[in-house]
Length: 190
Image 1: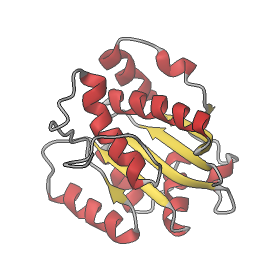
Image 2: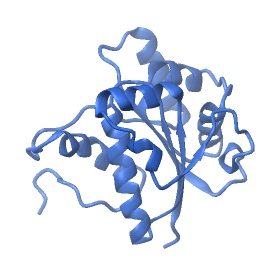
Image 3: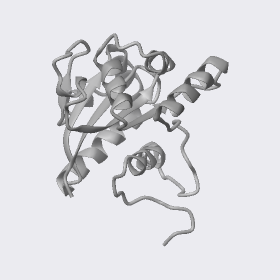
Image 4: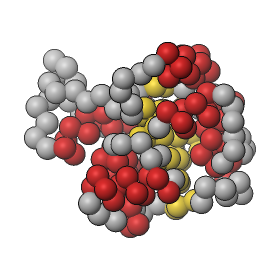
């Protein structure tokens, strides 16, 4: 099986733990050969929220290529690229709205637009509560366009022991939705 190239976009919504756990798991999937190149995008707000919520600067040592917000020369800004999966985690409602309305005003929204137009996997880990009608309408628009809305809603039946394990209940589901083989808790399966 050929390794899949992946884009990870981190926005300034609360939930940096999801981005951290996703990056850790993608690094392991790289080692196993399931994942090839991983491109990383982080908004300035994402960095601020990460530092506030996680109390560290670990995003500076994530072992993936970091692309700048306006770098439209990045390979995944084009449909001719070999990047097949894009995760936006956590996905702010502002980012969701720009993607839903086809506003490709930076690399993140352009890459999401490419994923949709090329019928590739775009998984949006939305992080907001409660939702209002506009949020729900935009999620419907994106679902109809082919995106997968995977809310940052953890499960508890696996009895997670800490915040990372709790976040992993969502991240593992995202990875599974993207087609990766992950060892995760599955209800009533051995």
